[in-house]
Image (cartoon, rainbow, N blue to C red; front, side):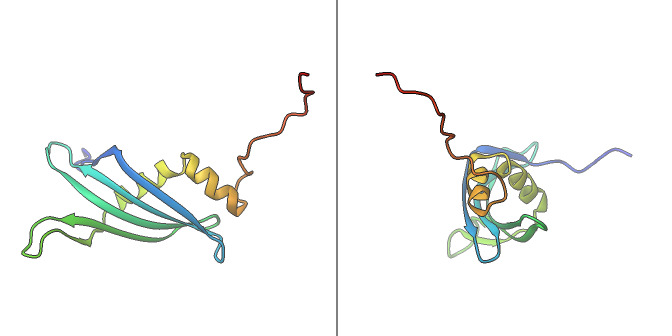
Length: 123
């Protein structure tokens, strides 16, 4: 049977990421804004994604919203259940320097600070 599910095209150049450590829970809170285009469509949708990562349990909290432009009151955000977009953004985030920095602050990975080299200085 052929796979009829089309994968979205994530426009990575539109991705805006921020992350902060939640020290009390030893989690990372990630906020992402990204545009996604369905294959064969010219129009893209804007998504706002908030997710929380836990070192031991992985993805522990997700909130995904899509911008809806139609309406009398103008554009507004509405709930979206697009888990495929969340997983793609999460996987991308895990490869970033931002992840290494925040995970280092929580002690998940060795701190990526600059290593000191013990070499004599030239006079």
